[in-house]
Length: 181
Image 1 (tube, rainbow, N blue to C red):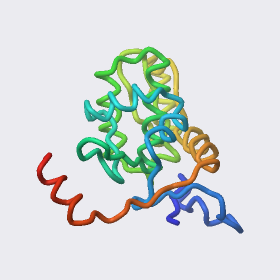
Image 2 (cartoon, rainbow, N blue to C red):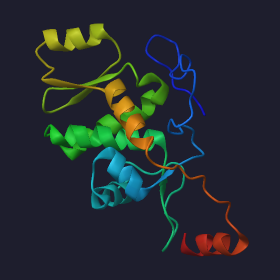
Image 3 (cartoon, rainbow, N blue to C red):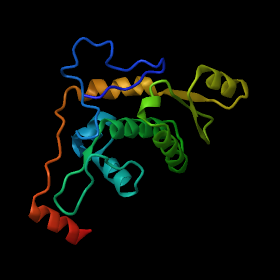
Image 4 (cartoon, helix red, strand yellow):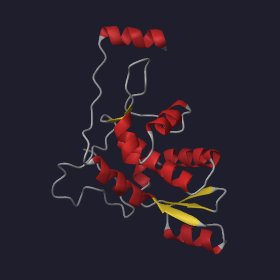
């Protein structure tokens, strides 16, 4: 199991005696769409729409034709939950797309100490307390979402579910995949 860096340079998991039961956070293990939706607190219909519009695409395994299952990694589910939190605050989907691009650029290792701030129109990625204070002192920040807190919420929710490792494709599945692509 990989570990994630904390804001202080240490890593999540370094101070844990046992990691049994914690959700997998590597890119080779994923969760089915229904589990990802439940862990993020969204409907399956939202999950499907966001995948089709490429707001949040599954990184472990995308859909490849009829009957295939998407597998979402821990990072994907974290972003899904953050998108839901931003939508709940009234941020437009266009601004959320911009924020998701910023989150992808920052990478998961930098997110534990990150706070998403918004003035209701734009979303700002703050990586230090000084940035949050600066934003608030200029009167721009109306609310904030501590990404580290959401990280732990997703982690706690996924403990209940089994992760899946994608099966290697057999020859027939590979031909079907090429034909539908």
